[in-house]
Length: 383
Image (cartoon, rainbow, N blue to C red; front, side):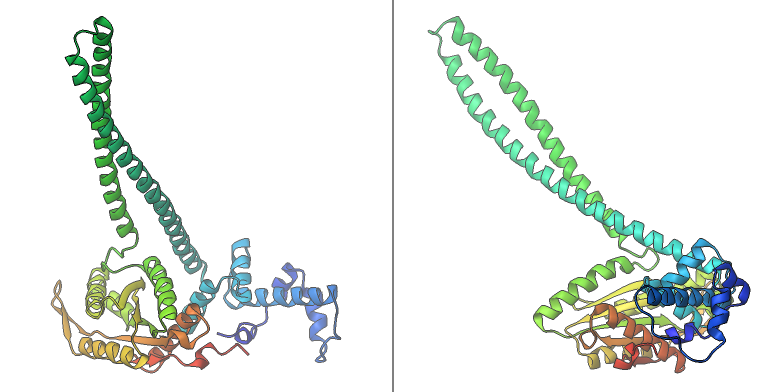
């Protein structure tokens, strides 16, 4: 949906009045001639008025109650301040689904969970670095203590063999024995601390894997994909290697959930995830992006080869006839649609993702169970 589309529907007078635009909007609509050029404050005022009118239009068109939350969402959507939110709303509108308060709260909730996961990931990275540093310090201290123990034990033996020096040397030998016992105790404690550190590092690594893994399919989740995408983009650019990204979406997935239940829908998600994971290797990474959507990253693979790989997988899945084992009711044909983008054919990796998503939408509109290549026009500016 373009900015032009977003401003086609004008708000009712009551909402304009609530925003303090009623009289100015009426005056502006009384003539077809454009207002004279304004400078400085006049231009800013005109821009502010236009923005408020578009916000009012957005809320009226979607029948949203005027609240601080809905006004903020409308502003971020229309101004492009939140590209991810704009993408989600556009897709909701393109799918002819309503933009409701419940849907908005669900989207915001998922976004907050994603932010929390990012903060957790950063915290884990800092903790890992601290544990690594502590482990090195512990090992150094253990080695130093062990060396000191060996030297001290040697000197204690020498002192015990000297009997002519009398009581002073005997007392020194006794003190040295006490010190030797204490340093050996410290050495044992350091060994235990090092073992505990290794165990903590293992548990932390397991927690990291859990935080970056989709629990249903076992694939990397969206957060893990974002990290991998950034790394592969940088390395492929430096090595002058091709890089492709694809969005894959299960066709008619809502119908599967409605007819067979969510447990059956989960089994279908696992099936598609397993199918996609067959092409995964050191140069191909598959992740669950969310819902019934998966993302595939292909490094050192030309767009033509990427298309061939995914299309072969699509055709293989479409040929299967699956049955719901819980009810013996056939699922029918399970298919997916996909959009592929040649990453370096677009201004940056985010633009390539957006183009792949637009190509996926074209595949859905073209009848589903097909793959489309992203085109430069997919990023054409809004008119």
